[in-house]
Image (cartoon, rainbow, N blue to C red; front, side, top):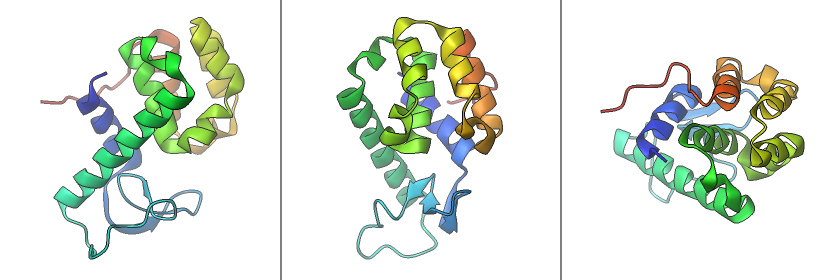
Amino acid sequence: MNLDLLEAELRRDEGVFYRPYDDPLGVLSVGVGHNLQVAPLPAGWTYPLTDAQVDELLSADIAATLQQLDARLPWWRSLDEVRQRVLANMAFNLGIAGLLAFRKMLAAVQAGNWNTAAYEMRNSKWFSQVGDRAKRLYTAMKTGVMPDEPVVT
């Protein structure tokens, strides 16, 4: 999977914040969707964060997300690149437990039934909560093409 593309998508979808903020669900976060309640900042870090600190948090959070996907959904690596990024993006956003709650969607993904998987995404509370992100991921799941894919150099 192209980690540079995943990182660019997460930066677009989550935003980049150098000071703590409450996400739409009231979870205290910083950087690129880094949940401060789950993982506080390392000792000695202060606000505003530097670009290097935001990058460090994001790299660690992406690595943790991919590790959780590997542990809980070992088949996900057999998917095409775009659908891998959809699952990684959703797991990053929802946490692995939140993604695993999409049982029907995951069963459809594993079976390669993209229309059903996309339908299950659209037919969820999450879809109405995350706006354009959900629409892009829905389309990517259904078609295998990520709309408005960021340009990475």
